[in-house]
Amino acid sequence: MSASEVIPYTQGLHQIQAADDTYKWNIDLAAVAALWRAGRIIRAAFLDGVRDAYATDPAPAGLLTDPGFAQGVGDAQLPWRLVMAHATRDGVPAPFAPALAHYGTVHTPRLPVRPHPGTARLLRGAHTYHRTDIFPTRWDTERSEEPKL
Image (tube, rainbow, N blue to C red):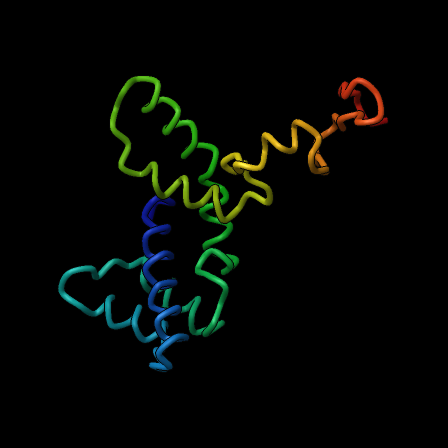
């Protein structure tokens, strides 16, 4: 199973788990994976691993917290990103791009955010802020940036 196929299963099972938490359906995700494996449409051997992961931990934070899946997807990350870069460069549609974006979202500790409308006020000095990179702004002088030592 490729890394880009693991992510949609992870997202789908997370949705089922969220509905179960909300509506108290008492769904056994290991049984869901076993049912899908025995079905007529999906039947992916990969679902045996999903069943085992949920049997070990019935309420994980997500499928990617299982050591086996985390290692497999993590090991595939560099080639996955390289293929994505080449596809983008060459103008080739890459249907696995959303899966890679989702993986990056859940595995990146800090992500950029869309500028808040209050950003202009911050830059004019109406409010203070704390930058976490290596260049703090000097508000007491000419507002220059200098590297932290």
